[in-house]
Amino acid sequence: MSRIGNKAVEIPDKVKVNVDGDGAVSVEGPKGKLHWKLPRDIKASVKDNRVSVVREAETRSVKALHGLSRSLVHNMVQGVSEGFTKQLEIEGVGFRAAVQGSILNLSLGFSHPIPFSIPKDIKITVADNTKITIQGVDKKLVATTRKAARQHVHRRIRKKVAGTAQRPRLAVHFSGKHVYAQVIDDDAGCTLAAASTREPSLLEGKKLRANQAAAELIGKAIAERSLAKKLERVVFDRGGFFYHGKVKALAEAARATGLKF
Image 1 (cartoon, rainbow, N blue to C red):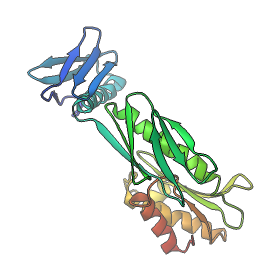
Image 2: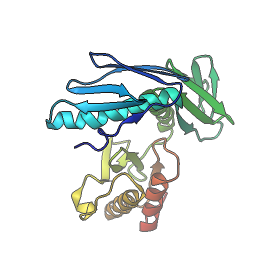
Image 3: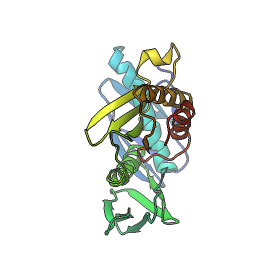
Image 4: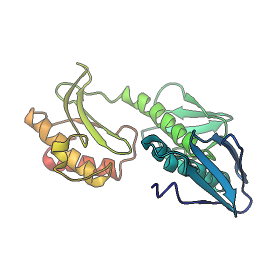
């Protein structure tokens, strides 16, 4: 049984939810409108200001889609009633951002600003020239817009941050489930050392996800493997992420083990 799928979605005031016979879900609220079609074998109904999602098959894939569908419907309701917000901050000497119409201009130390097209139904505001706020009713679109903007900034920064054989680049990455770290020689285009939570030998039976504890473990492991290859100094590439939380935990664990940057 899917505990998430079996939980009804409460419909707030001023929000209307309609489910057609073919599985098309439409949600309208103060923030806007959203539309989505349910997967096959997943049905939804509206009763007493609640949306109930049920499955019509017991296969593994349908069970997985049951909880997912309920979560997506909940996100639609929350999006049109409250909206979603993501933050992004750019750091660097002279770095700044400004919104002009449907374009976010990013000044990243080059002779000209780098334009980033703002998707439809997304609102971007900038405070203090460096703090970017991304808002919208579609949770997925808000998240992908932030990711695209962060990667846009990171690609420009990467032109100035590069590793060599003597001082390679320590790059970090985080997914929803795992933590990754690589020591890279950009001149030769090769990875000199790597560590991630996908390695069972590093976890030692612990069930860790992409959290600070896992980041500390990977920071220590990548430092030990780098030092074993006589690589003591690196250039830290935080991948456009803020230097706090998991990024900070990984970096401090690497430093405590003896890696210098």
